[in-house]
Length: 458
Image 1 (tube, rainbow, N blue to C red):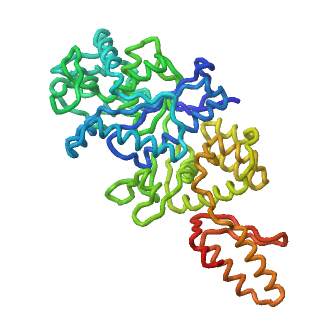
Image 2 (cartoon, rainbow, N blue to C red; image 1 turned 45 degrees about the vertical axis):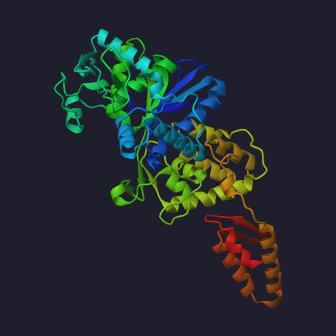
C-alpha cells in the first residue's frame, strides 16, 4: 500500500518512504497543560491518531513509534498557579489527566511515548550547551538565545523571509538580544517559579527547545514525520528546525512536516468574545442548555473534512453524524470485522482523505456489507467497542415495532390510520427512524434518541 502525504516543507504531496520500515517514527506537538483542551486542540489529536492507525496497519503495530509531548513548564502554568493558590504540580497533574480522558473519549489511542518536558531538562541543557559551542547560541544576562542569522535556511518551512516574519509576529524587544528574531532557549527563574540549575544560573527552558530535545532523545536526530496545527508552523516549528539542524547538522530532523488547518464554530472563528468557545468536555457533557455530544460523533464530524482544509463545527453536522453512526451501529451489531476494504484504505493512504473514506463507508452501508463497514470504520477509529456505549439502546424497540405493526394491521381493516399516525409521530419525536414495508416494521434509533419519551406508548 503506497502512502502519499503532503509535506509542508516542499508544499507537495509525496510518496512516504520511511527511513526504516521496521521503525517508523512520528512526533506531534502536544498540549500545554494549564486548562481544559478546547475543541480546536482535538483536531490535531484526531488527525494524527488516524495517521498512527494507518501506519500501524501498513507497517505493523510493533514497527511504529508515535511521540506526543506534554508541556508542563510554561508561564501560563505559573500564572494559573499564582492566581489559584494551587501548586504547579497539582495543576499539571490534573490538567494532564483531563486531557488524556477527553482525548480517549473522542477515540484517540495513546501514543507510544508521552514525555513531559520537566523530565527532559538535562537533555535540553546538553543541547543548548552544544549550540553555544557551535556558535549558534549565546548567553546574555542569565538568558541563552539562539542566533537566527547563524542558520541560513531559517524561514524555509513557513516560506517567509526574516523581515516578513518580524513584521507579522510579536517579536520581544530585549536589550540582551543581538537580533530581534533571536529566540530564547533558556531564561532565568526567581524563587516564585520553577527553575533548574544550569551553567547559566537557575532557570527554565524556552518553549521551542523542549520538543527538539525530546524528539532527539526518543526518535533520533532524523525521523520520518513531524506534525501539528498550522498555527505552530511559525515560530514554534521554524525554531525547532533551526535549533535541531544546528545541533545535528548531519541529522536533518524530520523528513516530512504535516500541518492541519484550524477549526471554526458555526462559520465563525472560535473565540470567547463571540460566545462560541467550547472545550472538548463542554461538548461531551453538554453546555448552555445543549445536550452532550458523544465522542464518536465528535470524531466523525472532524474526519468528515480533510485535515488540510478549515473545519466548521456545527450542531447540524453533529446531528447528521449521530444519525449515521446509529444506522451503522445497528447494521454492524454482532458482526465481526472483515478485511479493511481496499477502497477505504486507499482513501486514507492518499494524504489522509478521511472525507473520501467516509463516502466509501456510506456505500458499504448501502450495500449491506456490515463486515466491510465495521473494518473500514475501524481504520478511522469509528464503530469501535470502546466508543459504543453512547449508542446502546436500553429499551426493547421490538415491542414498539410490534405495537405499530398491530396498529397498522387494524388500520388496514378499519381504514382508520389515526392510531398509526399517533404512534409514528411519538416514535419520531423520540428520535426513532420508522421504516415500514410489506416485510414488517423496523425501528432504528436516530439522532437525539430519547428512550424516556417512549414510556407513555406502552
